[in-house]
Structures are given as C-alpha cells and as structure tokens.
Length: 243
Image 1 (cartoon, rainbow, N blue to C red):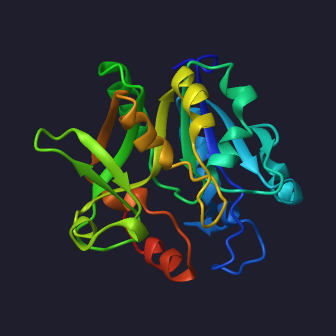
Image 2: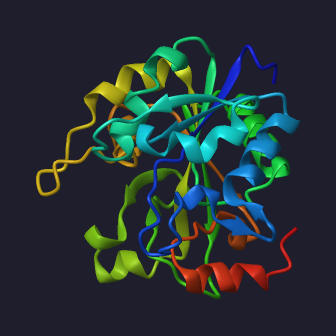
Image 3: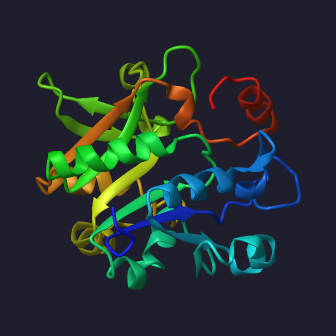
C-alpha cells in the first residue's frame, strides 16, 4: 500500500453539537488522545496518505496535524456526499480511496489492512466494513443481503421497516473504493428531497443498482465501528477494553 497509490479521506467537519465541548468532534479526546489521532496514526502505519475534510472556520483547531495530513475545506456543508465531492481533485491522483468518518477512533490498522486485502482479493469496486451488533443498538444503516449472502441494499434506520430494523448487521460509514468508480458515481448521488443534503451512504445502492462489485468485511468486534456522538457514548467507550 504505497502512499502514491492509496489515499484515506477522513470526514472531520463535524461540529459535535451533542457533545457541547467547544471543539470539533474529531478532536474530542478518547483514552487520552483526540479521536482523529487514532485514525491518522492507523493509516500512516500502513503508509497511506491522509486528507482531512474540515470546515475552514475550524482550521485553527487542527494546526497540530499540518505535518501529517493535507486539508480539504468544505465550505457551506451540504452533507457527507458534498464533503467527498470537495476531494475530487485529490481522489484523481490515487488508485484506491478509503473514506472514513472522523468520529470512530478504534477501527484499527489491522482492520484497515484486512479491508485492503479483501478489496484486492475480490477485485471489488467498493468494500465496506460491517459488524453484527447484538449487545448494544445504534441508529446505523442496515445491510440487506439475499439468500446467497450478496449485499442487495443498504438502508438507513430512519427509512427501514420494522423487519429491516431487526437486522443486526450494521454499516457505520467505512468505505474503500477503486478511485475510478468513486470519481464516476459520486456525481450521480442525488440530494435528499427533504434536507437538500447529499448523503454519501447513497453511493452503496447506486453502485448495486449499476451492477458494480460491492463486497464487505464483517469484523467480529462491533465496538471498533462505533461512532461517538454524545457524552454518554464517550463515557461508555472509555470503559471498553478495546486497545
């Protein structure tokens, strides 16, 4: 995984309003380190270049990372899909693109590496990380599979039926793309008619509908995929034996 071939884009423009800490959410400390530091270090262990997508109004908060990453600014944020669109110039320079959310500290370099290996092994257009959430529920997207185990749909909890909500395999917004596929299809994501925002998760169903090869790596420890949005979740993760 040479750094001239693979790029990690981390979505770090979140305000963290539910945490009410006065700093961008990715900079909130978990186990004595900012959330984003865990992610950056794991990618850099694999010699993967890292770009952070941030709100330009918050750039001063991120100055300590200047020597580790490149910054991409998301002006007038209009959703996660809009954020990734801002990175297209960078995306075109690489063969493979990770897109990770910036509020999930403990995915781990082992899973980042396994994700890449699975992606290459299956010649996937997109590989996503999932896990089976049995002990604790979160409002994440559900992964729908057919009888053969093939992914046929990803559905957000707010749009899911009662039956779909009972599915324990959840998706927490960790992707690995062929760059050419991401470049082509990101422009086809439609804005949500209610919120007018562009949701990046919609790209999964877009690729499925276009018969692209969408695969997954289902990891055993679901706690590694939890995004931290509230002080209660921060307190919970501190007590998890996860590192």
